Each structure stands twice: as C-alpha cells, then as structure tokens.
Amino acid sequence: MQVLGTLFGIVNGGTRFIWGILADKFGYKFLFLGLLIAELVIASTFYISVRNTGTYLTENFLIAISLSGTFTMVTPAFNKIFGMKLGAKMYGITGIAIGVSSFLGPIIIKLVVKKNTDYLIAYLCGAGVILINICLMINFKDEPHEKIKGLEAIDDIEYEETDQKES
Picture 1 (cartoon, one colour):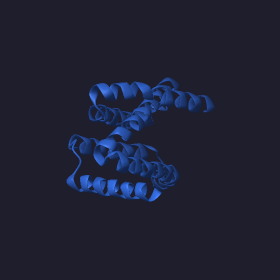
Picture 2: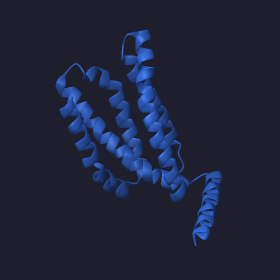
Picture 3: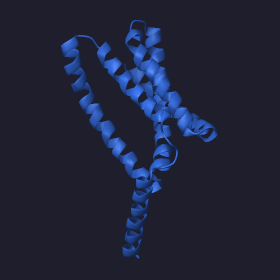
Picture 4: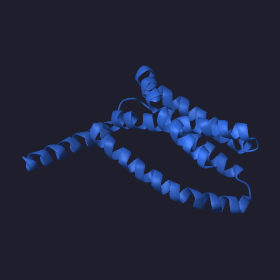
C-alpha cells in the first residue's frame, strides 16, 4: 500500500502540467467533462477491478491522473465563473469541503456497508454523484450569472476599501 500511495502521489503531481497545457489548448469545460465521464467509468468498474492486481493498479493509476486533472481544472473554472478574487475564496471553501468529506466519507460508507454488507452500493453512489455533475456540466454556461457578477463587484469594493485603509 505504501508503494501504491507513493506512485499515486507521483502520478497525481507529475501530470498536472500536462492538464494545464491541455486546458490552454482545449478549454477547461471540454476537459472537465471528459474527466467526469472517465470518473464515471472508473467508479462504475472499480468494484470489479479489485479482483485482479493488474486492473486494480491500472484503475488507481487512472484515478491519480483524473484527480490531477480535476485539481488543475477547478482553479480556472472558479476564476472564470466567480472572478479572480471570489474564485480564490471558493477554492478555499472547496479545500475545506475536501477535508470534511475525507472525514465523513468513511463514516457514511461504514453505515451503508453495514446495512448492505457490500461495497458495490458505495461505488454506485459515487457514480450517481458523478452522473449528476456530468448533467450540470453539459448545461453549464461559460458566462457568470448576473448575481455572481454583482458579488464580484462587491468583492472589488471590499478590496479597494482595504487597500485605502492600508495606505
């Protein structure tokens, strides 16, 4: 498991620059949608992959690449949707959510698995969430909503006031 974790980290960190290059070339929306589809396939087949060492390692490799791409795409997506200043705050909130979900995920899975005595339901729940994200991404408009543009303007005013106080 230590070797798998080390390789996972190397692949995750080592492929981020590739995702950045691809995002510059094709745009984040197209790539993010592709990542979600790949994650749906992985979540739907991961339960089966544990039966064979080769498929298990391959799926973990694909998960690491997918995770790398997801973290690479989230920042420009937030900046485009919410603006630079509000986007950075949203990314921070996402970081908190990742920590909370890392804590609550095993607890929820334990409750689900205890009732069904099978991890398949956990993978299918994950696939369902990814499917919802795919539907949202397909209907996603590249332009920020008017209310978000207003929030960004308020955010700019707050920063200007802070800059004036510091001067």
